[in-house]
Length: 203
Ligand code: SF4
Ligand code: SF4
Image 1: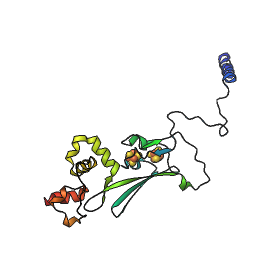
Image 2: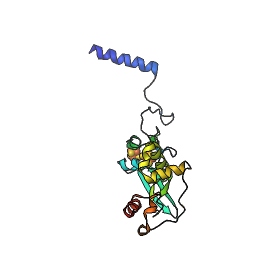
Image 3: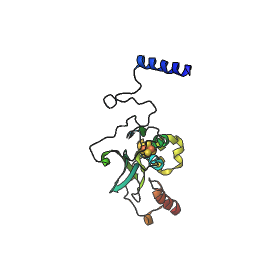
Image 4: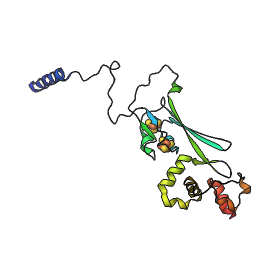
């Protein structure tokens, strides 16, 4: 019985010198630790729009919306903080490692509607030069081509896209074609997998 009492006394003296363990939150800012999992943020310049984060998100807090209007296509990625459970799966599975990163923010109280608790980013699509369907986000194509290096020569669309990026090839001038009009010549174009298959079958 004697030793526990001494231990308590030691703790009491320590607390007197160091001060209380608790803080006066919300009157003082709360300290979060380095590995604290708070509000996730997209980092637009690092995100390639691949949607891996949306696929692994257990609470479906990341929404993906693809739209094509005329010769332009966009992918909108939205992270809904009101649904997020701060598991960190999005960050852990992001291929660039920095496209979405959890911050140490945890305060969500707002006078706005809960729908306002979100962040949106947009990525431009590379469209198929025959059917105008989205092939992949532009940034994802650039990232993949750079990662593959000389290996991207195994994919005609990817290598053509990369050569254009380096100004070693010009953009196709002929108008988009329907699936039944696709000929052998269309192989030298940036195509979606379906049109590429048609072009290969006809060659
Ligand atoms: S790059 Fe990362 S943040 Fe962007 S869509 Fe892919 S997984 Fe999500
Ligand atoms: S932290 Fe978890 S729940 Fe929140 S967006 Fe990322 S994967 Fe989804």
